[in-house]
Length: 99
Length: 233
Image (cartoon, rainbow over all chains, first blue to last red; front, side, top):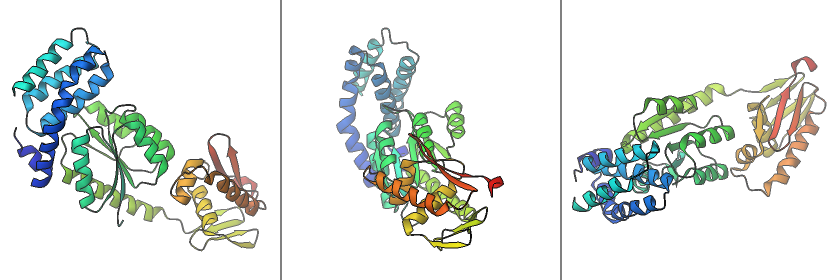
């Protein structure tokens, strides 16, 4: 994590930064874990919304490689290229767990 | 403006909750919703000074929401939050009457400063727009004095009658929806107020009966329209 951007965006308020990181650590793993289920349910709108939300959150904490992966996935889903999307989604979930 | 009331709609729960907290620390009153439909419901239920809308949201996207909000109140300032710096998004937002946009990730301080700047601008515009009194044919209405003069007869209006007539004047020859009227008068659109609204409209019609240049029309399912007919005076 690189919290310099978040620090800057939050006007240097360390309390807000700490709270964001705490919420991120609690909620984001669950949101990432839910992505394969959305693929399985073929809920493409839900998948796109979830990816969109995650993308910004990863950018906030400076995890740009993962954010870039999400951006690419979101673009594919929005373009209707959902055949076989579960494979790169699972790759992303794996990469996130290893990060 | 002492404590601006903001409607903030963003599906990104974590950052928006903290942004709400930041804006509240700066003295704003903030209602936060996480999807477009909940945002629209909130807008219909209370009076706000400004809306901050994310574009990509569940249930109703920010563009659709902005269109529906502008139908209810065309003067409400809107700031869009765009996920990407897409030119098309910015153009579409501005075409819908957005006052500003911020690209995510955005700085809380920058959002606050833009909100403040817009509200300051709106206040100046409102001051410039203030009309001392409205005139139709041989009649005139002074909202500050709550005084209506029709064919030489002076009628002292109650606070609610004056508020309603002022709303009609501000929407002259345009639709004034029932929701907008109720929010404008009472600050909410509780359905039990519908009957009271009808009563006040009837009273205004009665007061203006002797003035042929002005008429309040019923628009079924929409609301009302105050029509000014200069030639009829």
